[in-house]
Image 1 (cartoon, one colour):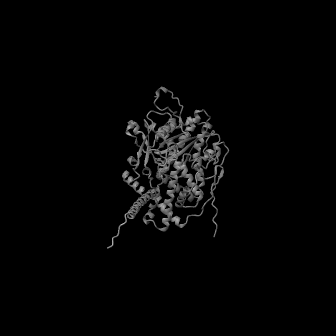
Image 2 (cartoon, helix red, strand yellow):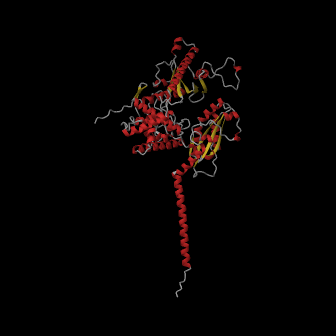
Image 3 (cartoon, helix red, strand yellow):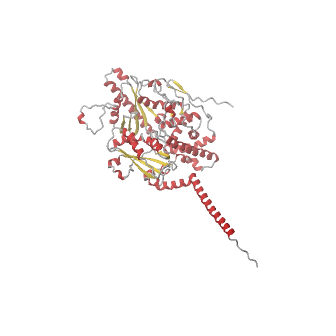
Length: 603
């Protein structure tokens, strides 16, 4: 019997060799049973996990080509505006890079594209956004209008483009960003300013030296494509392995979205977290087929001992003075569930995960493993419906929508309103970035709750109480988020839960940081019992809407093992009480007989 050659998972990128942090657990290929099981998953994928159409892919490529040309023209105009020599103008360059799911080739229909324009040091953030611009005729601008931007800035060039809509600049964020739709494709554009006089076409973004002398925002912007490229390099040993990686990433993304777990800013997992976690499982089981790797994914993270970090390769220090994530730093020790980015400088990509959201994630990992493992065992025993096996419908249960809106007895809605569409968009983006602090830091820590969960999907509707006296514009420009919670009755004092102090602190210490805070911007809370939730919560989830949801809720309540155990205990206590009453009657009758004996008369 020949010994298979060792599996080499090292990668060469950015002038250095990168090795996996953990050893291979099982490098053997999938057996016949696993491959047959995988064919059922492929049948499910063919119908339920569509890829971007050829036309859609071509549209994205065309948009990126136009954006790249526009960015280079902008860099050239900045160089000309500074009066540089013609050879410096021609050599200034400027490059557009992509990161995330698009760069990996996930090809999910309707997904946004994360892009980064890398510019030489002659371009500033003011040149990018066009801020600080003084128009030739300031009197032509009304004080109520947004401040004018430099017409030669990249932001204005993009905003004026005929194919661009929904343009929103976010200049004051930790990582400034432009977000817009170009030919219907959502684009997030970051800016990176290198400490170099040019960015030539052969610029290697994976070389650690590109980070020399850059500011914090540029460091974070460059981290996106550098991390994505390193993930791709570590899982690209063979074409089959890379396709397995992409398949499982698509499935985990679909699962996370269905279960309400896909949002990094809300405290759950985002795209980069899923990419790193799937890549880690692939390093542990490099020759597994997609179905086996998906099963191992849930097994690994069901049993992962947090806060042990998830890392693809051990962090290395290029000695450029940037902070590299280290387990032994006191601040890092307090992080709940760290997933470390593989590129220099290594950092925790799940800082937003809290103990409350980790509880939700762990429950879902456990549920996912139970579903997939039972499927595989039933498939091996031939206990599954043959028609469902052929069609792949056996996998439907794994991707069922979450029962969030029937899973809690109490809910809190947060209606985010603004006086106009532009103000509402900027305000909502800021509030969304702070919601996890309200849920995990303020409500979760200070109230007697056994569980609290923020649903990361917004509703384009206003469910605020009529007594709020909102204007028509405010109700039209509003979105709503829901929080579900369960009270810990052992810690509860009284019969009312007062959250006014937490909401006041949220407004005073978090929301007050937004600038400019325009009159009409507000966040309106409203409490609901589960049966009082509006119908919009159930549309598209339960066939039959709210009525069907409430019926399912009753079924789930009756099937709850804790409820069944409580009912059994209640029946037992009732029976015990009844038996004790019968026994007391018997004892009382026996005692009476003893006190009044019957005289026997004999003739």
